[in-house]
Image (cartoon, rainbow, N blue to C red; front, side, top):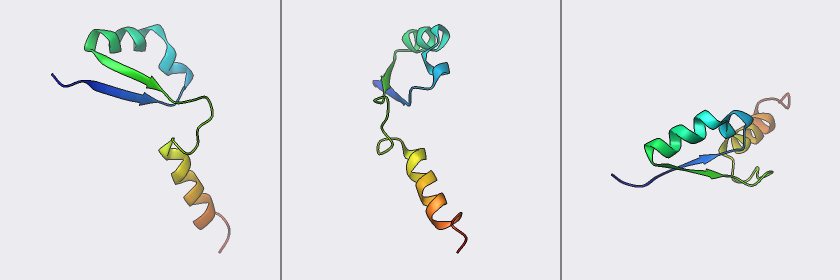
Length: 58
């Protein structure tokens, strides 16, 4: 089986014991992003695009 790494954005529910234990049991490495990293978080890039293109009233 290939190594599997899941990148997390530090949401509170991602740190609960159930998620941690399940990942460990399945052999999934959990990689947390730094506390504030909008450039690394893809949803932040999408939100920036949406606000710039769609919500500015043009």
